[in-house]
Structures are given as C-alpha cells and as structure tokens.
Length: 274
Picture 1: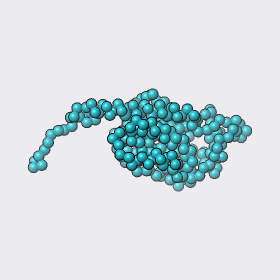
Picture 2: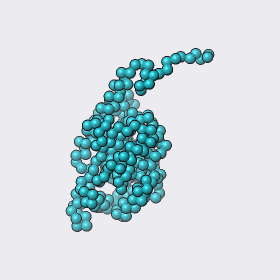
Picture 3: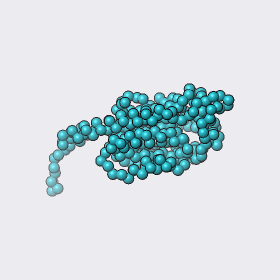
Picture 4: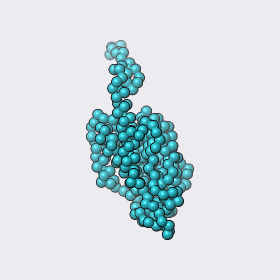
C-alpha cells in the first residue's frame, strides 16, 4: 500500500451485473448529505467488484453516499472474448491482449452515467493489471472527457488487482488521473498467490476451465484470484479513506463564513440597476 491520505478482474465485462452489484448500485438514487464517493472499475472475474463492495460497505457505514460504476469494454477488436466465461481459447485470448497493453492502447467502452459526470468528494479507480499495466478499459476511461469531468479538481485513489506486479498499474492510474486534473491521495494492491510463473499458470488454467484446479500441465499450482486476507486489507484501506473524508468535512465546517474550500468569497453586492 502507498501511504498517503488513506493511511492505515472475472465473469464477463459484457455479462449482466451480479446480484450483489445490483444491490449496491440501487443506492445510487439515495439522497444524503454525507461525502459522495464514486468507484469506477472494470472486472471480468469479479475480483475488482469484490474489493469495491467491501470498501463501499465500510464507507457507507461511515455515512458516505457511495456509487459504483462498472466500465465495460465494447471495442470490437477485443470485446467478444470477454462475453463468455471461461474463455474459449484461454492462452491465445490472454496473449492476444499483450500488443494493445504494451503500446498503451485505448478503445471503445461503455460508461455508466455515474462515471460520465458528477460532483464527488472522492473517486476510487479499480483496475486489474493486464500485462504489467493498467487495463485497456480503465485506461480508456481515464483518457476520456468523462474522466476529466469527474476528476477535475477532485481527490482520487486507486486499488489494483493483480497476479504479481502492480507498480506500473498504480503509477499509470496516478499519472492519468492527475493529467485529468485529479489530486491523487492513496493506492493499494491485492495480489494473487504464487510466484510469477505459477500464478500465470493458475490464471490460464482458471480462464480455461472456469474453476481453480490443483495442477496445470502436470505442475502443482496455487489457487488464483483474491487471497482470503483481502477483506481485512480492503476494509482497513477504506477506513483510512473515510477518515480523510471526515477530516476534510471538519476542516471545511471550521472555515470562516467568508471562505469556501480555503478561498475567500467575494461578498460585494451589486445592485441590479448598476
């Protein structure tokens, strides 16, 4: 975890929302005076969603109005492979994304209304790691005008779901979000079990069979996806984010009436006849 303000991906991008995700998003219509938090994420194996759900629960317990916005990859060059789980050709489908990832490609995506515009106190970006880097769907959103509208002048954090390496992904989200006018506050990563080689074998096996297996090509492999301790890590990170939001609210409420967000307000009144 990167220490900062906070302290302390899959079943198909184009498949229907899970029951739990629908339940979480149903609160999007709730009116509240608490801090407004937006989670923008992409998921294929539902790992990024699980982390978002856990963090959202903590933030709601602290009085935040939390929205979840799932980015979907619709680009015809890549989308079809993610319409089913398991993958039809696991190895080729995974390797097939490498060229786009290495060149930092963007593509067509579907953006929910919540991530297209809105006034939020905090935006949390969830990105699985694809070939070391930020995934195509999240990179595409971060480079979009929609991200500019949502992030400009706002604080943002990131969480990364990955097999092994996460640094390029975290730094990529930080860089792109900052370029859109956001203020980066913190980041965390959730890695899978196993070293570089065995974790890749586990993931390929899972993508191909749709379940964890003990061996792949005769080699004993660990289970893939989030490790059990992700729950405690996600809750601790979200608690830190909530503490930051509360501190900001207390600071704003302590400002003199002639200031807003630390800046003086022009109280000069002009007659309608002037």
